[in-house]
Length: 258
Ligand SMILES: [Zn+2]
Image (cartoon, rainbow, N blue to C red):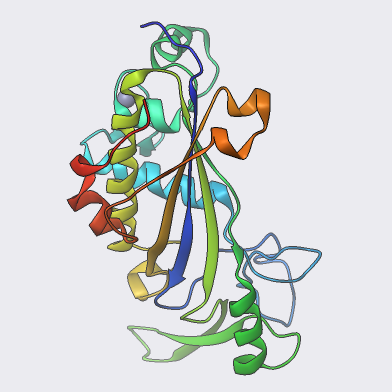
């Protein structure tokens, strides 16, 4: 398959935390006497954020399961990352280690199409945190009681989380190398919808990390735009709605730039 860079789709919008969100920070398990379950924060602003790697990893994982691409690896006693080089998961999310056997497979998939930026809180959310939580406080502490099933003793476990109703601005870049690549966009929206019915971050099975996407916008930036830098050379794509379900329902009605 002949591949040539044709341009980029920029998908942006909001991630709304329907429930509290916990994406673990680097200090997790290190601090003594404090909350050991901290969330990841921007070191400059102290604001929590959603790392692109967390979002991308979860989307890939959900799409792999959806397409029946997950394989159990007995040696590693875990699930192995899928990589066939031909399916939409491989083209969208790329990856796999650089071992010699896989170079051919990687060549078939072409470059990884999707990049996911870190998502930072919106200005409104930062202001709301100050109202809800107090000045300079951006997260809440939720104490969960793990009950010992034998002794019935409660073992309180404090966990830091981003409060429900917080909103983060996200951006995803989708590189196009083949005219058929835009069909992969539908898989991206499928993955986003799966995530809305799953969870982001830790403790998802206990109610954390329910998110929804809205205020969706899609823009096409062709090769030309990258030589002229001219706003005229970008094109806003009219979506059938601003939510993931609306986009999926009306996907076939989208007019794509030629
Ligand atoms: Zn594959």
